[in-house]
Image (tube, rainbow, N blue to C red; front, side, top):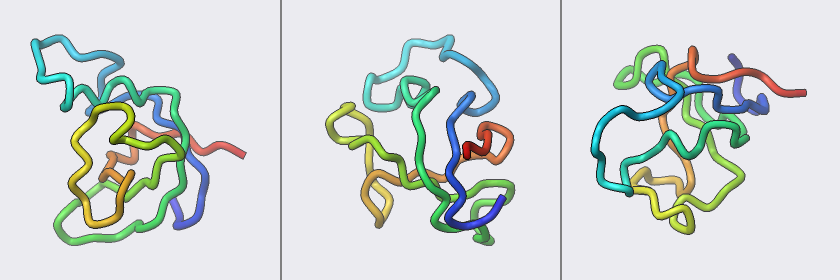
Length: 84
């Protein structure tokens, strides 16, 4: 996957839903089906992940949003599909 590619989240941590009782601010599974753009594809701290800048506002979705770039998360490449 390359920087600036448009992607859609198809799963999170390899699963289509969370099976545990999570704090709602950690329920990133609600992002499944949401789109964004890869803004970083290589980072030694996040192997097999890319930094996705989501089109949606993570604060408005009541999700933890603690990366330096707002509305971005490090996502496993296997959880993403490329969109045209």
